[in-house]
Image (tube, rainbow, N blue to C red):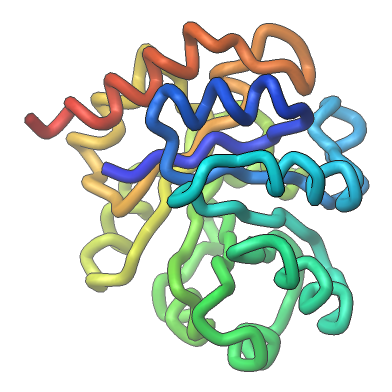
Length: 206
């Protein structure tokens, strides 16, 4: 089970996540994340990424950014995660380095998801007026339907050290993603909760 710790804003939290066994780190470049304390300036993220150990995937989380800016991010990040109203054509242009996020609410369609040629798909909770990071649970039934396509599905939305094992056993995604569920304060991670989350996620199917 792969684990992504998202909403990284400082080197201390990034290194703690790596030491705990995180497979990927998410850096939120979307301005709307400022309200939850999870925004990081791309220049700051660049310096954190340079200090990370090898074999940890870095992901730029963005909303409706122009293609040229995404290419600039990909000069120092491994992947971009699209959370806006981007079109499938953008995924075509970015190739295998793109993750497309969807909100698994009443309007979610597996068929529409598949029109986006992404390396992986992230499913988050559907909350009116929010694109993610709400702490609400994703619809696990929709996530199971997405997993059934055989595509790489990243389950996000309301995951915590207390419920991630159940989520993994129920949905059996490719990976799980957490931000607020391992925070001690907005934008600051609780390192013990990170360790517990990763441990429970990776041992849930043992």
